[in-house]
Length: 158
Image (cartoon, rainbow, N blue to C red; front, side, top):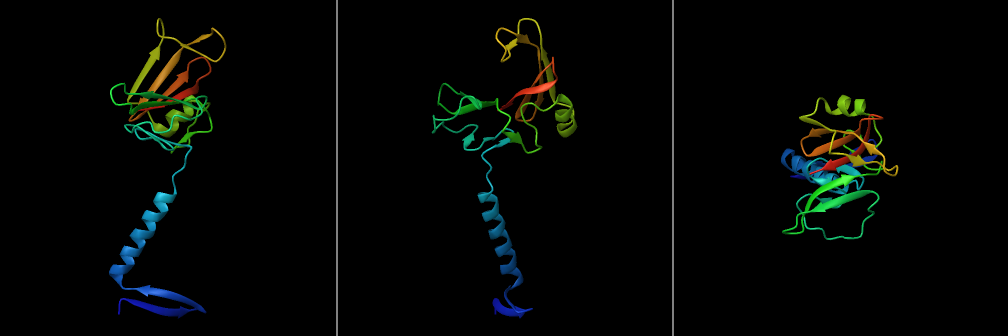
């Protein structure tokens, strides 16, 4: 018999054969994984919430103060997403506003580090103030660090 009902401590338990037991565990795991999509989670190389790298932009209505989406001109697919708001976070719990030291502690030394100096400046939120940026590049993710206060200014996934 493949399935058997057993009473243990006044509770009825369904007992499966070893093979069906494995199938049930896999099925339950898949259900739990599919239900666990966090719309605020930044996934390097993949996307954020319902916005996925490489997919066509189907929803044009999103809060542009939260993030910026860069599209491929040829096919209108998402090429890059720049996160500007601190409510979004990575799997390692890094978000905009976190320190440079936190990024290094949680991600290790970057694959690539570029400091933008002369000629390559990015305007900060303060009007006409130019800030120097340190880019920490990891696989599928880039942390833009404001060199003046050593905090994450934005996070780019690609």
